[in-house]
Length: 166
Image (cartoon, rainbow, N blue to C red; front, side, top):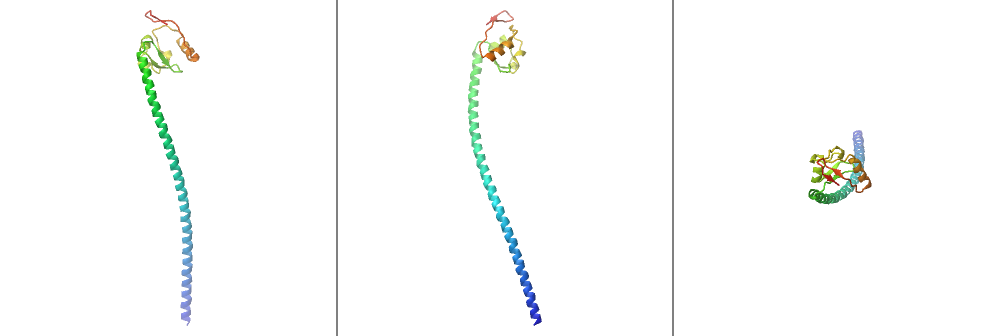
């Protein structure tokens, strides 16, 4: 009987040990389950943020596409205007020089090329750098005044070969 009681006590201890192990395993599983649930919630939140970011990127892409189309149209218009201006400059028989506000040469007609001794590489250079075939000692001041007042300024000048221009 003692042996049976000892076996019963051993079995009870073993059973108690199994129950405790089972409870510990259940607690670990419960903890792991809570962590997984928390991770799933975080992933869902990240997915929602990614979806929002994706929608914002798609919206930005649409805006950029629209802007790109507008810029392309403007570039085409500018190309046409530039071609028109170039054709006008080539066909006009007057010496015309187009300057920027910084007094750098932007364009000139073939007549201006002859009268002012300009060359193709003169585009972009300051107007003060040119050595014209005409005598205009205050050329830069005249140009600055025209730009400032946005008005026409006429003066007579003589070419080094004697021809007069007005």
